[in-house]
Image (cartoon, rainbow, N blue to C red; front, top):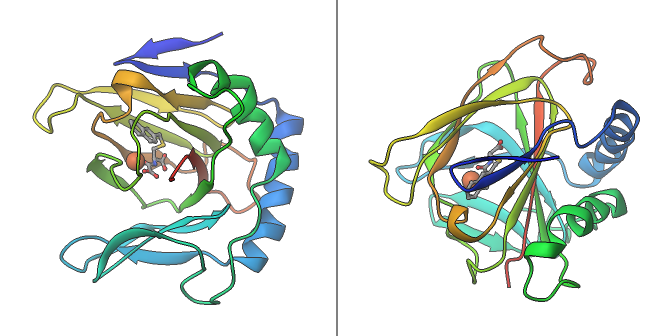
Length: 205
Ligand code: MD3
Ligand code: FE
C-alpha cells in the first residue's frame, strides 16, 4: 500500500516491529565500525543531525564542501557493506522504478536525530545521475517531513513519518526540495534512548 504526496511515494508501516528491531540491531554493529560524525553545511555551521554511511560511498560535508567519499572521515576505513535487509527493501520498492531493475544502491546514508535535530529544506544533488531514485527508511521517533517542488519557493506539504515507514523519491520527486522540521521526542520506544534514525539509499555513480 502506498500514498503519494507531491510525487513522493510513501509506504506507511512497510516494516513491522520485528523487522525494525532486527534492522536496529544490525545498525548498532555497523555504527561501531563506522561511528556517527557531524558534517557541516555551507558557511561552516555544524549540522544538528549526526551521520554515517554504508556502501561504496558515504556522504560527507565539511568546509571544503559536500561530496561522496569511499572512506570514513575519522577512521579512514572503507564504509561497511549495506545490510542485506536494506537491499531487500530496495529490491521490493525501488526496483519497478529503475531503468535497470537489478541495479543496487552504492550508498546508504545513516542520519541520526536527537530530540532537537532537524534538517533544513534542501535538494539532493550530489549524485551523478538524478534518474535513479532515492529510498528512505524511518526508524524510531516520528518526524515532520516537508516536501515542496523543484524551486525553493514552491508550496510545500508536510507529513509525519513514523517508525517503519518507507519513502521513495523517483522521477519528478527526485529533485524536490525536502527537509525535516522537527521530530516528536518520545513518540516511539523502538530505540531505548529515543531519537530517530533515517536511512537513505542512493545510486551515486
Ligand atoms: C525527497 N534525509 O539525507 S529522508 C537526506 O529524514 C534527507 O533524514 C531526510 O533528506 C531524513 O538528504 C529525509 C526522505 C527524502 C530523502 C531524499 C529525497 C526525501 C527526498 C530526495 C528527493 C526528494
Ligand atoms: Fe535530502
